[in-house]
Amino acid sequence: MNEDKRKGLAREALSRYITEHHRRCTPERFAVLDKVLDMPSRFTIDELTTAIEGGDFRVSKATVYNSIDLFARAGIVKKLHLSADTWEVALDNPPIVRLVCEQCGKVREVKDSQLFRALSFKRYTSFTAKRFEVCISGLCSRCQNNGKRKGIKKIQNK
Image (cartoon, rainbow, N blue to C red; front, side, top):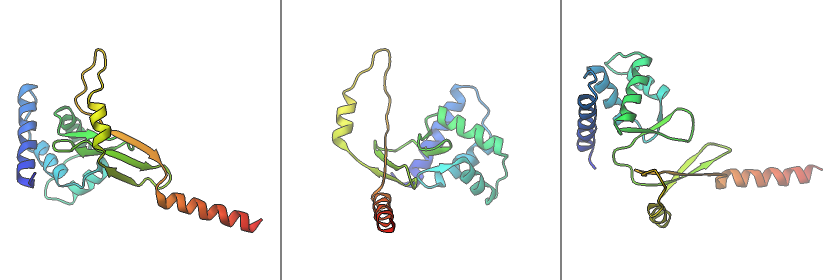
């Protein structure tokens, strides 16, 4: 999806949500939304606030937090379960598996169509799933190799 279409869909989703839920349509909310759409794939509120401060528009940190909360309720962004304050745009994200290194924090994203096909057939009583994400934690190859080398050094030093 090209960038203009993505921004248009996000602005439409926000406008629709604001109208349906009788919220105020403020230029600050749309300025924050534009900055969110310019952020890398994953971002924190602090990174977003820093990016906004570097621009032409001034908003308080409270406005940023309130806007992100509004965007989440509108389905534009979603909070990731990687850390306490990590977000991503939710409009056009295909299902992915996140491999999270417990040691260095590196996140690698992979597609696993077989896993997602199996999960799509899963049904839950009294619950309708809209989307899902899979996070697998462990050690990346780099941290595994560092751990092996440290283990070798310990043995040699004894």
